[in-house]
Image 1 (tube, rainbow over the protein chains, first blue to last red):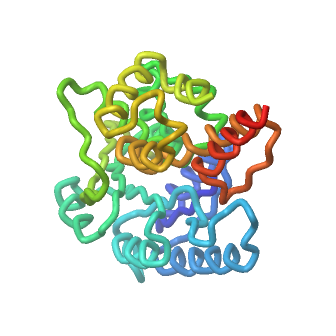
Image 2 (image 1 turned 135 degrees about the vertical axis):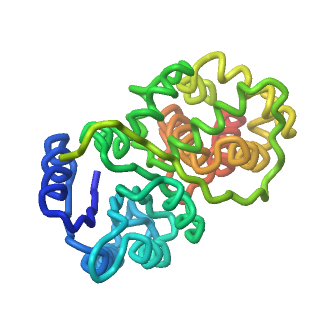
Length: 197
Length: 89
């Protein structure tokens, strides 16, 4: 996966990088929101120029953007707004020490599904969140053939929507309504009791 | 061919899916005749995941018929070609 990180604390940033790269991910680190947005813009521009046949020109250039909330020059929330303006379907994970209620309130400003990881968390939690481990575990419990599904190379949004759909299918009495329902802002919170550092 | 893809979701889930598809206006045996309605129903149920299911169904049809379908080939196109080949044979 291609991952962009914005984290001003060098040690934490390096920890994220080491953990994610050890799993084979392609990580780009930035030290604040402004640098992150600049990096993001460059990647969007590069993708638009190369515009291969397999990727839509509006496809996000990263599989995940991990943002700290409080950073110098530009905070995570403003960075997220810039990024989502460029690519509304970009997957974003906030990793922050802010209490979740504060973050939940703030992310309502974003017209997009984002995920929250409340610091402190174990580094494995970050890796599992990035790799959608919980979603795949739930799909496996529903008897989905995970090995086969992974072969289709689904995006985060696709596996998330697949799980949502299957859970609704199995809900007694649930009726699907035909197209046209708007997706409300949602946040997924992952938490752990141990520090990332 | 459809089941080859949908059974990846699990046999039980596939059975429930057919029930919901029927409620959305596409019976199990009508998929070939109602590809657009089928695509819409898949999108209603699975959101963005519908496109990956459709691509896999198209790819399965292509591998069985020897056809070459591009990124822009819709499920309706693939099923139409499948029907044409079936009637020609």
